[in-house]
Length: 335
Length: 251
Image 1: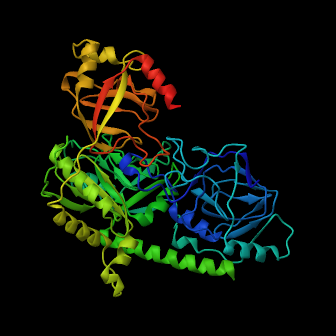
Image 2: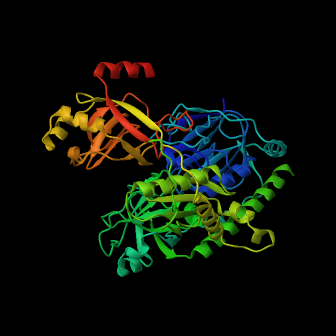
Image 3: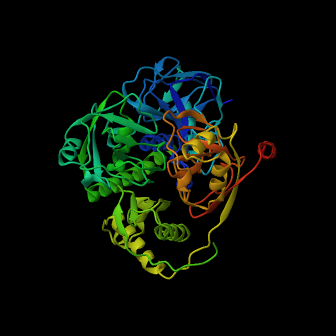
């Protein structure tokens, strides 16, 4: 017994960093929408950053933790509580056997990541634990978590073990205990109400009207309720081409912004198709993908142009900070 | 097809596709010679990948290469002497070198994959419509469809879904005005001048003329897709009884 689902939420799936190497066979990448939150959640419980965690969307599940366990919750704040007491995010949390973990109101972001020490004991399919909903493979039986599901966990790392021992030695009455330190998450996930997303010009950028190009980078766009893990549909000023373009399908990427004939942009996300035939106006800078993932349907976002050199520099700096963060967390866990 | 060719890697452009991918483009036309160039580079890159290479996706006229900018950067000479260079520029020069060296490479021969199809009836509810639309009998549609040789240009849309070239225009039929909400896996369809097979059950608007008992997507196999870009596909008709027996045997 590990974790039993007492109530399913809106959409809770097992995700890791994605299923790479099979796109040429039409197999989508999937994986966490917000990869920074996933990676940090894993680091906080002594897992490798590639391990899988639960991606919890908007309305979280109710889970029964059936053995002593080290967990971490990161990403959007969906008001997690253990036995009714609010749980802080972005730090290791020791949970006592038999406790109930619940999620409540959405305070910020829209996707929360729950990592457990050792990771979830599900089979890797094509080198990944990510859930591919449409093909019904990966994750927990290829589907979202439902009431009654029992999630088993793997043996834990040395770091997680020593952290559990340390936390257990503290005097406590409640159902959980946390460290007195946490990750400065704002550096990795600047959550604001209407975020500004940095975008590189796409392959067909020059073929849009001057007015459309200008509006794309100055107006704001609303994320429609029909948005999901496959893509965000946006509404705002209609984006038009100079002249109709007959395009052949070609590869698309995480964060590709394409413009279908109705003029409403679509940002392609974790569950995107491997190829697409609509003109591409832009490509979200990789460092801003987690921010996009945390925008709720109904909220707005806007775009600013960024050069390739700048996007690359930001990416490399961010990855280096994550490496440093991994070293510090590992040190803290074992201390 | 068993002949081998020499293909010159010419007339391409290389451009960034965001900050973690690069695309090599050979024009905008669906052509066999272009397909071979894309295929050759794709195969070469997969067999001789560079540090930071993740994967590449071939399409009709281009190859998109995904990479990890940090791994590319760490491998570069500039990084070792303490400077930051552009991972894009690094990958671009690696690919340019490859394209120069590829010039005299011989290409692999095609693999032919034969796909049994039960045409019409329950398996192909739109066969009669396709025949009527083209002033043909259903037998003529079957013979035209199964008489052709098709080239797999690329896979996409769904796992294992082939984009095939080479269908006779005599059986071209527009998509259904209202898409079906669920099409069974294995359905063989026509949409305009294209034909293809649905590997998994999905909604879709293609005209369904038949169904194959073969699985085009097998998640437990390596590779997980029956077809690969560059394959030749031939369809051949089987009876409904054969179809059922085959399906039973698959289980």
